[in-house]
Image 1 (cartoon, rainbow, N blue to C red):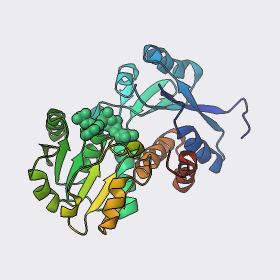
Image 2 (image 1 turned 120 degrees about the vertical axis):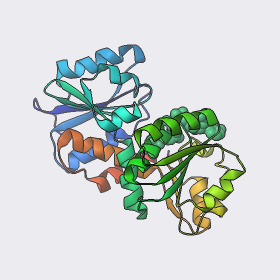
Image 3 (image 1 turned 180 degrees about the horizontal axis):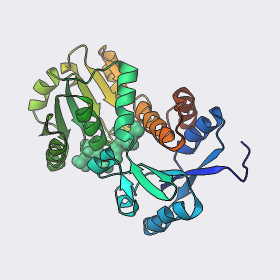
Length: 289
Ligand code: NAP
């Protein structure tokens, strides 16, 4: 790419950030559309977050992604946030419109976009089991609940976190039945028999560490198994699910989906998702990182 005096700046703020594949994924999208913008990975320490966000105005930075550990803290430094970011209490995207900084969260919509697009899953009135109660699970449950899923059971190793999340999101999505259960509860098998979707939203399986120990053989034959872990791209959970003839959905879809939605917020152009996916796959390598 050619950098000119008119080139606009996009970036990701995080710590650590050197492992991020977003610069390659967003860079490929900018090139594909021939946009005069550059996307950089900038390491921002927690103590410097406020000044880094303020610098967006001073330097005219068009937009940024926000990653670990700043997604919650950054809310204090913005002029406005969208409904999803407010409900999730976390921001992963900022748009600078003439000095006004607005925060968005594209994780939930990115997840739903890839789940529906890749598997044909129709959320309306369906039942889901989500394993995990951390930041990613929060986005997934919110995406499912606002996307039309009727019943969601959140199961987590630390059941108090699952309960807190279920309570919080039930208040935000009053028409949806959201309940909590301890991971390993004997009740889980019966609940899985009635589920249309199982999501692993924990870090289990990342780097092939740990096993998602739930009875997937109890799922109905037309159920979908979704894993948000993308390193490796093909987790043991997904391999087992495919072995049972179940439809599967990998974490790369959410990664590309959230990036595509951020790209559209900054540029106003439809994201070239195929190009972004190819760049992500290439960046992660044959084993998926
Ligand atoms: P987090 O906030 O730290 O939450 C981690 C979750 O994993 C918690 O529910 C935790 O349970 C559970 N967990 C961790 N180790 C466990 C174990 N040994 N046994 C049972 N449960 C365990 O992390 P996060 O931000 O939600 O991220 C979770 C995963 O999602 C990571 O692998 C991340 O890479 C992935 N992710 C993917 C995307 C994507 O675009 N595909 C986006 C965001 C995150 P406790 O509450 O009991 O500790």
